[in-house]
Amino acid sequence: MSTSATTEFVENERQKLLAEQGQVNEELTHLRELMQAEVDVEPDEGDSEIFEREKNAALIAVLERRLQDIESALKSIDKGEYGICTRCGNPIEVERLEVKPDATMCLRCQQEVERLSRRNRPQRQIDW
Ligand SMILES: [Zn+2]
Image 1: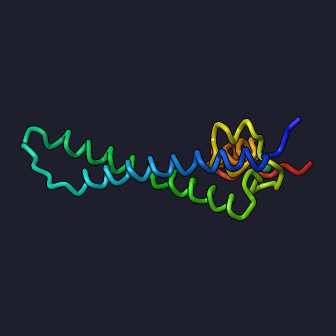
Image 2 (image 1 turned 60 degrees about the vertical axis):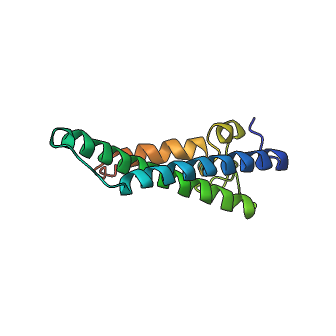
């Protein structure tokens, strides 16, 4: 049996999301500072410096996406739509929200979407 999210639970999740939002913002600021810092590269260290910057750029992209997820989760809390699957409209499993407070889909839909996105080519429709 799946219980839907209670007000207390949602408030708790909101706190978690806000805390994480703060952390991610802090990390992004730090990484952006690193990226903007004057690069003083020794010829020998050029490769590892470039590697570091590429790694940071990738991390920034991941964190920015994470921040968007957190923000949209916070927005859905404000609208009273938190914990509702955006795909099928059923309540998202509370256990799932505890692990991933910014989940926007129930487990079944998430798995379905991931399965579909793994298919690169459109499959031929079999119509019996
Ligand atoms: Zn769903």
